[in-house]
Amino acid sequence: MTHVNKANYDKYSELFIAVAGFFILVSFSGCRGESEYLGYTKTRSGINYKLNVIGEGQNTPQPGDYITIDLFYSTVCDSVFFSGRRKFRLEQPAYRGSAEECFAMLRTGDEADFIINAYEFFNKTVGVAPPGFFVEEDDIKISVIMIDIQTEQSYQQEKQAFLSWIEDIGEYERFRLESFIKSEQIPGEPDHSGLHRVMLNEGTGKRVEAGDTIEIHYEGKFLDGRFFDSTRKTDQVFQFVFGEEMQLLRVVEKAVGSMREGDKALIIIPSDLAFGSSGSSTGVIPPYSSLIYEIEVLTVR
Image (cartoon, rainbow, N blue to C red; front, side, top):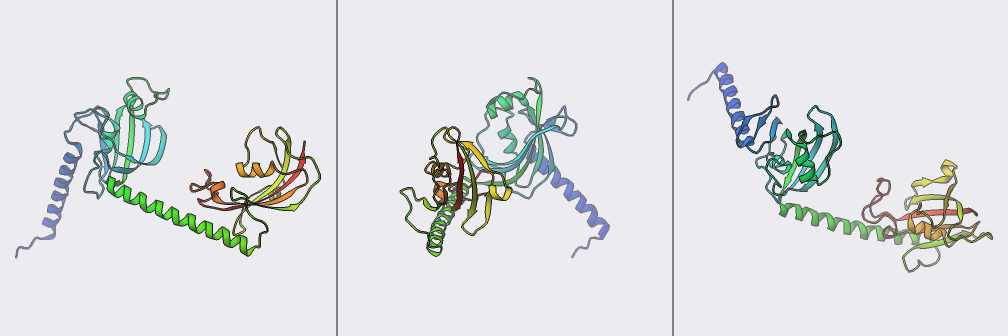
């Protein structure tokens, strides 16, 4: 058996790492060339690139695969004007030196900077005019972290599993709503749309009509009693012109339209009449959330 002392072992380890790094860089670049940007290498198609972190992935994505990346757009002087995480289907490169070609060079876990022509990128890839701070000969720097690579088959399986989960959540929400109505002994039946409305106090004032200026108090709660909005807690009356511009949830505005000054009502809204399977854009209302609103019409002018 051959023995290697520690000094030699360290030397061989360093040599192995250097050789491995060389082959990774060659594999990454395809064909390397001189770049006008310090620290960058240039491909035959004109992409300037710099590999910052070598990930543990084995394969680069192919057209048709779905990739998840952290993306940063900046000027070559490092002024970032966009950042975000994106998941999308990788298409065939639209032209030589395109962004798609950049993404196709990365394995999972890789982090790299790419410099390509800004005008070609915005006009041919994004399909919009470049921002005003770019001129035609300018380049754009695209920094990419490859988070995940999925085949078309894997993506579709994941999507189907998610849709099945969403269906289950929808069924559970309907069950919770039915249980709530029974346990709270909510009187009456829902209307044809599924909306429950319970009159708590009947006023004697003017009925709400299109063009009227309305002042109301309202409180919005989930079925478990948690508040997500309340004019009473902030002690601020909500005022709006009825029918001109929808400033309330459509179903709430519709309920207000059937009320008169002095009325106070409780409405229970199934999720499909509220924010549905997507939830609110603010994230306050989760998907498949039934809502309870208590509304009091204070004035109708």
